[in-house]
Structure formats: structure tokens, C-alpha cells
Amino acid sequence: MKTYCKISGWICLLMLLLTTIRLEAQEQADNELTIDARLNTRGEYRQGGFNPDSTDNDKYTHFIKGQYIMNINYKRSWLELNFTPKMAGVWGDEVGTVNISEAWALMKHKIGFFAKIGRQNLSYDDERILGYDDWTMTAPTHDVIKLGYEGKRHKLHVILAYNQNSANQDIGGTNYYNGMQPYKNMQTGWYHYDTPKNVLGISLLFMNVGMQSVNKYYSDETYYQQMYGGYIKAQPGMFTFEAAYYYQDGKEEHGSDLDAYMCSVKLQAKFNEKYSVYAGYDNLSGDDAFTVPDGHHIGLAYHPVLKGFSPIFGSHHTFYGAMDFFYLDSYVSNYSPGLQNVFIGTSITPVEKLNLNAAYHFFATATKLDGYDKSLGHDIELVASYSFVKYVTLSAGYTFMYGTKTMQALQHVGDNRRLHWAWVMLNINPTIFKK
Image (cartoon, rainbow, N blue to C red; front, side, top):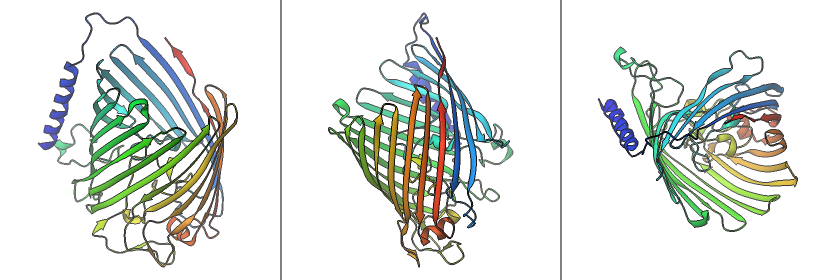
């Protein structure tokens, strides 16, 4: 009954918003239809990454991944519709995915109120908590109702989601969900304020996420976890300062209590249009009493409260190293030793259309391990990209990581602990039609 009351409340909110939209008696003649295409092809040659399952990691693997997207967008005075089919997968693998990445309708009022309904990506602030994470080529989108207001200084979004496997699932006596989204339902509120000239921006975020019990054979219970915190971005002159803090509590999908946090700071100095440097630090909390016995198997003490922070919807590739060892895959039994990430980098544009990036990361666990140091290793990343024309970009990258014995034990990186990864990517995204 509570579920139906929630759905009824959401519908009432939507109807209230729609009554504020002033529909013109005669439809505006100016309509806009745009069709964009995107072909993203990336070849990789790597040793390590993505939390491999075997310690036999001295051999390289190489493959080509592709992502092909068609974006159809329609606009008129108060209405916008979007439809985006997508295919993604490894070349030669028949298991590649074909789906509707986005399909939504946006209705807005001239004073700033709006409603956006359907399948859509959620990208907020620096995308650490809610992000598109397009690098994986299987970037998540969400079936949600988004209601809100956007003015010159203030923005307020309310996001509501409720996921089910089939229309008559409740009738069958079960309410268990195991579909496309990692959650059963979600309620999110986001508020943002910009000072004049956008020198300072402040965001506040609250999320209540209902995660289905992992033990579907005995329980269809939904466990709720909450996340709240904020993000700040200041741009005084040539400097850009970013900082964030988020706290996580409630219960995770195993039914255990949560008490976790993350914090981050980043400072960037942009000397001119061609040269900038940056540095920062991330700290994501981890579980206490994390033991690692011999044989590369993680041993775990009993945890009455889980303290490992989980940025479940964030763009992990952007923040925690290019090899994606962290937060794409979980540790055993959903426990985590957390992560500390110290990084420094630079971006250079030596000639027009050519951009060069270099970064260094030092990784360490957030909690002390039994018999191992906190240090995980050193990571060096190099990326170059060149835009031939407006819609054709060729980029390439190389990453070298030297892992410690702790990294070897936790992530199965191989006995030599020297990991290499190189890639080349072609991105073509022309506008095919606009009328």
C-alpha cells in the first residue's frame, strides 16, 4: 500500500507541475529536429585492470570495443523529446548489448519549472556520485521522473524512481527486483547555488536508495541506504578549487548497517589557454579488521557495521586511476579496505587541436591491514588527443602501474606487480540532420 501511495504522490506532483505550463492556443510554427550519430571505437592492449580473477597476469590481452549511438532530438517552445538507441560490445562477441540508452520527454515553463520523464542519464557536479561514466561504453541510464526548477542563481531537482521486473509481479506474490538498475527505488534531491559571475558554486545532495536483498530465495526485502553531502567549486582568477564530502548510512543489500564517508579536494591552476596543472587528494573510508592471509584470498572478520564507502552511481574511471582497479568491482562479501588517492597532473596544448595530459597517482588503503602495508602502488598515465575536424577526434593513452605486495594480495595483479595498458580510440560524432 505504501508503494502505491508513493506512486500516487509522484503523479499528483507531476500533474500539479503540468497545470503551470501555459500551452499556447496555436502551436508555434518553429520546430527543431536534430539527428546526431556517434561512433566510438577503442583498441586496448593491456596487462592488468578490472580486478582480474586469476593471478596468472603476466600475459597481455588485446581486443577492440565499439559503441555506436544514434541520437534523435525534437524541440519546440515548451517541449523536448529525445530517443537514443545504442549498441556496444567487443568486436566479434555476439553478446554485445543493444538497447535504448535514452528515451525521455522534457516539459518546461518559461519561469523555470520543468518535468523530465523517462530513461535518462544523471550527471551532477563533478560526476563523483551521479555520473554517466561513458568510458566503459555501457554507461548507466535511469528510468526516472525528474521535477525541478532552474533559475539564474538557484537550481532544485527532485528525482524519483521505482523499478519492477514485470507489470504483474506483485500479483504473483513476490516483489523481488533483479533488472537493469542496481536499485529497487530511489528518491534524490539536489540543490545548487551560483554566485554572480559564477565565481562560486555550491551543491547539496540527498539520496535515499532502496537496494533489493541479495538473498532473493528467502527474502524480497528492500534495504534503504542514505547518502548526503555537498560539493563546492570556486574559480578565483586563474585558480579552480573543488571539494566534496559525502556521508553514507542506513543498510546495504546484505542487511548490514552502513557508516561510511568520502572526502576530496582538488586545486587547478590555469596559466593560459595552453597550459594548466592540478593536484588533489581523495579519501574513501574502509572497513576495519580487514585481514589478508596467504594464497591471495581475502579473510574477513565479522563486521557489525560496514564502513566501506560505495560511490554506486559515479564515474569511477575519472577519479580512481585509468586501470579501473577500484570501485568497478567489489571485494569479497562486499567489504572494502577503502582508498586513498594522491594525484598530480598537467594538461598542455602545444599546437591547435592537440592536447597532451600526464598524471601521477599514489594509491593506498584507507584502513590498516593485518600483515600488510597500506601502500597499493604508483600509477603514471599519459594521454594525447587530436581533433582533425570538429566531429572527428583520435586519442591514445598509456598507463604504467607498479603495485606493492598489498596490491598483489588484494587485486591479484600478478607476481611481478608491473602492469601496462595502452589504447587508441577514434571518436566520430557528426550532426547528420538538423531542420
